[in-house]
Image 1 (cartoon, rainbow, N blue to C red):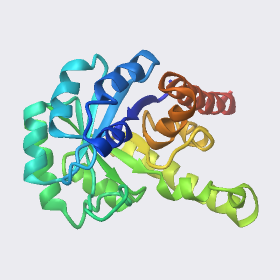
Image 2: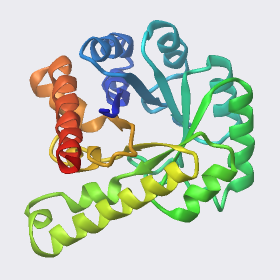
Image 3: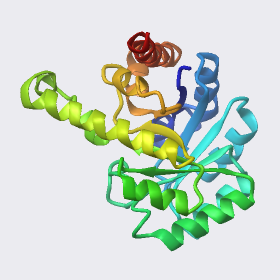
Image 4: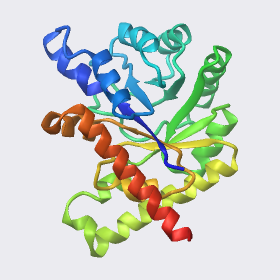
Amino acid sequence: MTARLNVNIDHVATIRQARRAPEPSVVAAALVCEQAGADGITIHLRGDRRHIQDADVYVLRQALTTYLNVELATTEEMIKVATQARPDAVSLVPESPNEITTEGGLDVRANFDAVRAAVEQLRAASVFVSIFIDPDGAQIAAARDAGAQQVELCTAAYAEATLGAAGLHGAGAERVAQELHRLREAAMLATQSGLQVAAGHGLTYRNVGAVAAIHEIHEFNIGHNIIARAVLVGLERAVTEMRAAIRRGAKTLTHERT
């Protein structure tokens, strides 16, 4: 079965907020993604509100016919928004005000009590809970013990390894293989632990196929590369092309098994 694709539309809001203008509309963008075949929409409500705003969460909750996944930190402020808006899913992520984008997975072990409390509140509101973590066995165990229903494996290290010609041969190719192995092992362990498995961060049309060939991964959250492509070819085509890249990866797995 081909993994789901949730399109992260944060950068549509980034353009809007650059002028504090009413457009481009995140709702319009989300609907185009749905029409192009996206299985869901992902947004990140950050503490500094640099792109997505509180109102976006509520409006998208009403407008979407597919699936709304909201990334947020484990703060009382964010959990309150999520329990009121009640998206289909919340992905708990680490957050630093000085970062350009999320840097690595949430350290569930070091923040276990806060994470578990957030998970309990969200699940009590009937919200599906995922935790964004590095592909590490100890973090998977902690996420399970905290009550999460899913882990999203951070693919940043793999994505960085695939950049440029260095990732195509020699030590670069070896590093790519090592990071894929980490992801594969983590996905298997998470599945054995009773968790669903998603993946995301830094994935592109060029590198997503190998990750899509990991059978246990059933969902991808991808934003920057799709929106960057959309600037050149349009959002509908950009989403369609990413879905095709994921399908090609899944077909590689099928062929390897036959």
